[in-house]
Image (cartoon, rainbow, N blue to C red; front, side, top):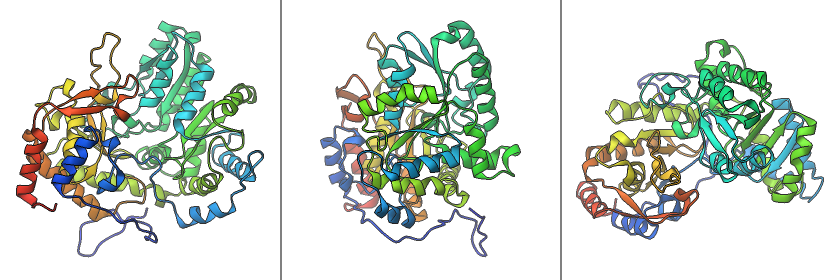
Amino acid sequence: MPEIKFYKHDPLPMEMHKVKIVQKLNLLPAKERLEKMKEAGFNTFLLHNGDIFMDMLTDSGVNAMSDNMQSAMLRADDAYAGSETFYRMRDKLEEIFGIKYVLPTHQGRACEHIIAQRFVKENNCVIMNYHFTTSKAHVTRLGARVEELVKDEGLIEKSNLPFKGNIDLDKVRACIEKEGADNISYLRLEAGTNLIGGQPISYENMKEATDLAKEYGIVTVLDASLLQDNLYFIKTREESMKDKSIREITRMIADLFDIIYFSARKFGFARGGAILVRDEEMFHSMEDYITMFEGFLTYGGMSVKEMEAMIIGFDESMDMDIISQGPQFIKHCVDVLDNYGIPMVTPGGGLGAHINARQFVDHIKSEEYPAGSLVTALYLCGGIRGMERGTLSEERNADGSERIASVEMVRLAFPRRVFTLSQTEYVIDRVKWLYDHRHLIGGLRFVHEPKTLRFFTGRLEPVSDWPEKLVEAYIAEFGEDQ
């Protein structure tokens, strides 16, 4: 977006849209929030949305649609096979990415499932800059493993490095030499890296990594779910890209990969997904999985109305004015909290503002889930639903011990075009209050623990009566009705 100058105010990020449809929010009193948290098993995923004031759990499927996206839904061709809506979507994706073959899916994890089914073999490994929960689960379910080779600097929470999602090329080469190219299912790069703070990867690093993979004949895969944020960072932070348009950068990135997949719940502002395959023979080797697991090849489990909306959303994802608002709001939130002395992941990345929970509640041991505890506390003290991104999101080791996460974070997602700056200031205020009262926060333990992706549906309980004491202190500060 253009930099808006103020006459009597310091510069602030500005919404480059006007609001035409609104949804009423509900702020329950703190004592009621405590009861709702107990009913949800101290898992924010299990809260009812009607009991949440600000839902910052994710940007997946909850981004605001534009007027043009909503109006496009009226032209949807609701055919089981051969829908013209699909061909319009396919043509738009080819226009943007330069890849002809498209496999539609109902969302991003379906893409991961199909790619894993096609390429992953038992005892193989998949190289990634960093994993996402579902991308890793699909690999390990098939008896393979993930090698996370992000540069060491990417795991340093507080820094000013512009591309903390970059993969370590020396580690990649060493891994290939050790494993043998035939035992590597594919190289997957995530742009940007969700679980380490939405941190971007540079175009230069993507090119060097894919060149290395091609040297050994290894398939290259791009997870483009968070691509719109990554495009913004490449254009604003990578010197060689500053004079190029978003569309030019997108095509340059696309040309590096054999396969590109994305969740349209993120990229495209709608609800669905797709796999783009460069090689025709490879495409045909994957299409049976669509009809088996997703639906026919021209809808892939999606509503055609959503497909029409995402066609417009793809174009909007190429608009710098549109894709810049999220990163700028996130930067504002991160910078203010950082200035308050609150441990944040810096610099601000895409997707959301990330709190370093390991430092925020450094008195809680990793086995009692610091980030999960902080997420609980944030809902109790403000009605804000964030997401735990730490040890709770990991799976246990084979011997039953906890796999301690490399980073322990709370993500405050900024769904695109949803929240205002005043709502952002409310979040900042409540996080600051909570930090000043962090000694009241305690740990959690499981009472129901699913084996896979336990953070979605597991239930926990506090290790003491700390939630009651925290709510008591909050009411003393803000009153009964807050």
